[in-house]
Length: 336
Image (cartoon, rainbow, N blue to C red; front, side, top):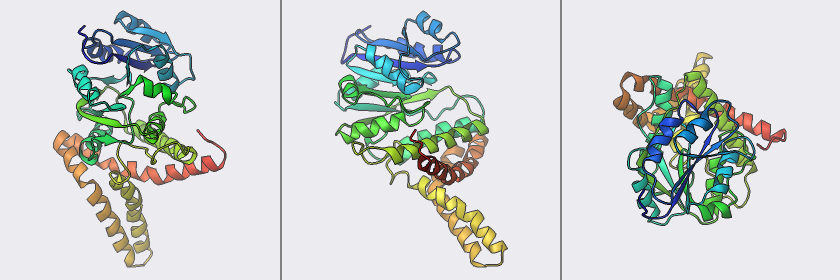
């Protein structure tokens, strides 16, 4: 392994990840340099994840923190020796040349670095394509700045000194939901910068059915609402996405306009003519915000892209009731 630049500790939290782990570890191991290390944190797995990671040369440790991604990442960071921590999910495959590309971004001296999604999705289901291509499109089209206010821990690098100063991820956050948004907001709130690395396109192995995807989106939205309602004064401008609120305007406006369509049609059916104009306004706003994504999806994946585009509608419909659900949970005393 060559020695060039600052050392990196790659930290991968795993929980029953035997099906994807080898594909994730191989490209990482192949490009490590002298001084780098590969750490797999086994978060109470019941399969052979630990054995596979050890066989592939990773340092395997058992999570000693709270169950979940945040606790596992913190456990890995405690044992890390590198000057930078690179957090990668157990279903995220780094592209060839990732180490050199990351070093080039490190040389620009940000506090943290964020990679992007690959436009290529695993499997054949349209729901998987929609999930991956939506994030790819958001990174490459909607984010206009080199620096962002959020992060995604599928491939997120941060200076170890910065991570330690912020005391890591909030392990009170259950599962893998908004622990990354919370960390990013604290980082930016203390004056740190998160630099985008769009040249590092990460391929995700996880596949979704439509039902699984909608369940995932519902859970994420509720978690984001609870996070925004409990967030502290040390956080930066609210961020539940890598993009800014202005860059996410198509989603915010779509979440409202998608409800204007059935509402307007119901009003029209009840005998009020203006209802048709309300429905038309909702459709126009929705189309204006999402036409670019729809066309890009179809161009990228053909029929699969057409089906994926249609999934925009139920995804947007979920937002308002999920937000209301989160607000009710908060009022009932739930914080996480």
